Length: 452
Ligand code: SAM
Ligand code: SF4
Image (cartoon, rainbow, N blue to C red; front, side):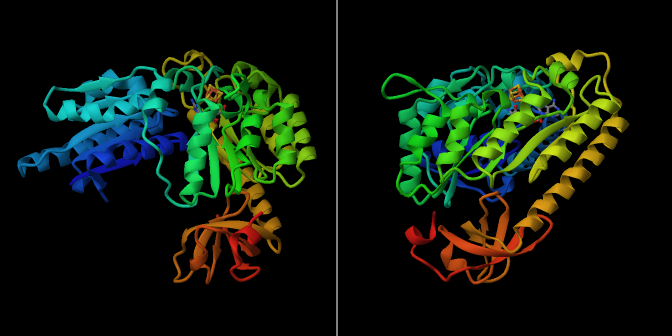
C-alpha cells in the first residue's frame, strides 16, 4: 500500500480541500502516513495570504528535497506536490525555485490530482494545473468521509470583493456557489456518519447565491433554514462573512434557528473610515457598528469575532486609535489580527506610503493586548454558566474528553470519555488562558434529550 502525507497551511477552506485530496486518493490505495519520511507522496496544501505563509512553503520544500534525495539513494521514490493558493499564484516560480517538485495544482483543479500523480509516476516531467473550474471540481470529488462529530462543508469559493490588500480574488478566482441539492446531500451524508455540527465555508460565505432545486437563487439564510431541517444535525456555523452581505434575512436566521450557534466571525479589518475606503471594503465604521447592534438585538447571547489588519499603507496613529476605539466599543470574544503584508499584484502593495515595520509591530502588540484582555473577560463571563458542549475527542488526562462550547472554546471535562460524539450540558468551572474546564451537569443522557 502507498502512503500519503498532507501538510495543510492557512484557512479552514484548505483543511476542507486537504480532506478532499485524501478522499480522492484513499480509494486508489493510499493510506495516511504519520510523517513525510514514511510517505510515497507528500502534498503541501499552501496559503498565500501573507508573505510569511508563502515563504514557509519554500523552506519546507527545501527540507523535502533533501528527504527525496536520501530516499532516491536508498532506491525509493517520493513525489512532491504543491497544492493550494501558492501553487495557483506562483506555479512557475515554484518550479523555477525548487526542481524537486513534481506536481503543482491550484485549488480549483485538485480533483485532477489522481491523474496528475499517474502522469508524474510515468516520468512525464513536471505536471502543472492551475485552471479555474470550480463547478467541475465539486462535480468530480468523491463523497465526503466524516471524521468525528464536527465537519466543514465548503459551499462557496472565490471572491469578487477585491479588497486592495488581498490575494484571494486572484488565487481562488470569481465567486462560485455550489448548488443547494449538492450541499444538502453532502450534509445529509455527514450526519448519517455521525456528524452533529457543520461549519459552512466560503471565502465570502454570506455572498452565497446557489441554485435551488426550484431553479430560484437561494441565499445563505434560506440554505441555513433548509439544513436546519436535517434530523440529527444539531449545530450550524458559517465562516467567513463580509459585513456588506450580512442581510436582514440572515440576521433573522440567527434569531429563529436554535441550531445556528451564537458565535459570528464578522471581520471589520479597521475602525477608520479612511482606511476602510482605501481597503475597498465598501462599508464604513458606522455601518459595521449598526450591524453589530442589529445582530445583538436579534440574538442577545451572540458573541463576535473579527479579523484586523494593522499598518495598512497610509494608516496613521489616529486611524489606528479608531480601530482600538471600535474594539473597545464592540467587545470581541475572540479575534485574529495581522500586520499588513504587501502581496505582489494587489493594489495596496504599490502604495507609496507603506508603514514602517517597527510601527506595524507596535500597533499589532497594542491591539493584541486589548483583544487578549477581551478574550479573557469573555471566558471569565462563562464561569458558572451551563452550556452545551459537543465532545470531539479525548483529553490529555485519562477519562477526560474535550469538546467545543457554542462559542468554539475548547472545554475539558473529566470522566466524559464515553460521551465523545454527543452534545451534553456542562457547567463551566474555570476559564483557563485558551480553554475552559467544566463538569457534566447531568450524567450521560440520551442524546436527543440532552442536545438542543
Ligand atoms: N473574506 C474574509 C473577509 O473579508 O474578512 C477573509 C479572508 S482572508 C483568507 C483572512 C484574513 O486575512 C483577512 O480577513 C485579513 O484580515 C487577512 N489578510 C488578508 N490579506 C492580508 C494581507 N495582505 N496582510 C495581512 N493580512 C491579510
Ligand atoms: Fe479578501 Fe476582501 Fe475577498 Fe475577504 S472580502 S477574501 S479580504 S478580497
